[in-house]
Amino acid sequence: MAISRLIVDEDFDKAIALADTALEVLPQSTQFLYLRAIALCMKPSPECIKALDEFLAVAPKDHDKFPACHYRKASYYICVEQKLKFADSFKAGLESEKNQLPCFLPYQFPMKDLLMKFYAFGDIPVNIVENQSASNITSTPFSSSLENLMSNPQRKIMLLKNRELFLQLAARPNDKYNTVPKPANFPKPPRLASLKAITLKDINPTIDKMYDGYVLEVKIIDFSYLMVAINTVIEDENGDIQRLAVYNWPLKGDRKAEIAEAIKTFRPNVMVSIINPYMRLSSDMKNIIRVENPVYIRLDNTSADQKCTFCGKEAKVLPCSKCMMVRYCSKECQRIDWIEFKHKEMCEHLKNYLS
Ligand SMILES: [Zn+2]
Ligand SMILES: [Zn+2]
Image (cartoon, helix red, strand yellow):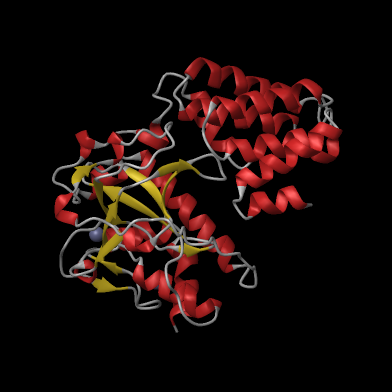
């Protein structure tokens, strides 16, 4: 239906407007209340909680989206660091699963495992995934020992999630994606030298704003996958991790050629300067640094290929003999990447894309 299509195409304002119009005629429609709430959830604001509550007030308790709406509330409360409300919403989600018809069980919600982890570790900071500062475990900017990297749970979660998506997309080579029109009214980017430095922990994920006059220097730490945007994982000088989505990057050729170019251009250890960075809540309710106009990023790949794909150390690196795309400083890095970080599955796909 039209509203879901608009949401998939990330045209949230139009989706909300259309749902509003529909609700004027059918104010109790759970379908429109739900879609309106989903569209609102794409930007973090108390509005989305209100919309989710409106759905929950009207929908029958066994509605298949009932638990999902509680989990969406829980995800929002994590982002704004309201621990108690998070716990309440998550509990309500679990509780409401009991009302589901057996055909909807086990109940699927993409973020549930992660929410469960936060819930289970009630006394660790709830912002561990989005905003945990890893400053204390980083030795020098953009370089850290393997032990330190491995002891950062945020890093592992984000890398595994990125790789999971990479593999899912690789299994569906014929999916079609719309493009997001390049915003026409962007002024020319300022000179890098005139900008102030900013890091991920200075960027408030709950405020939907562009950090005008700032530059965020990051390093790519994983291979990218291509949907509407090029998506990858980045690390800043403090060792904080975040996702990056770059829209409208010029790619040429058929889909396979585009994917190959995206993988090569946005590969691990390439440094990225993001001008006027902008963090927002993505469609999966997690934060992402979003670049809509590619002239607002500068890439520097000067020493990318002299560094270990896995740990980032500059050393004598040897390529994986199968894909020739990853390079390792040690057997240890290769072993961990192969076994624990899915290179075993990624390898074949990287090889295929780049052949
Ligand atoms: Zn290494
Ligand atoms: Zn390989």
